[in-house]
Length: 193
Image (cartoon, one colour):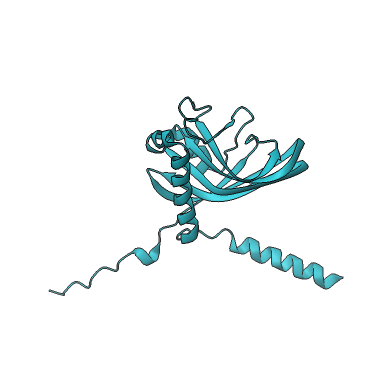
């Protein structure tokens, strides 16, 4: 009984010592999925183009899985964009309690209206409040959509059926892309005088 405890403690210590590794480049498959999801949102509602063009940044989650039976949860991994470029990886998590049943998969995009909102997201202190609701992306749905508390959220159902569809309580983490050392070119040897 003593050996499994020691092994567990050693494994935990090793994981803490390693810490979170910086992202040198986000997985190419994930980058591709994020781009395809942006195209899918624009296809379903062409008016979303204005938000992709005017927002200070946006987080895109190609696939959020959600399931519940009274207690529910949701999770997804995506990309954070600023200035039209991916600047890091975003993760979404949500735990809910209440009248809910079912499971579903959907895509989600969060537009950031101002610097405070995106900085809170990048600082890992961002949570969607109950006052923020998601707009289902469909043709024309974004025409009258307005930012609330500096964010605007759209979802696009993929599969499943769920009796409950809130985004309130979603929490996020962000991991920035690290400078990719393999993309740096070494300086050419200068001839000696």
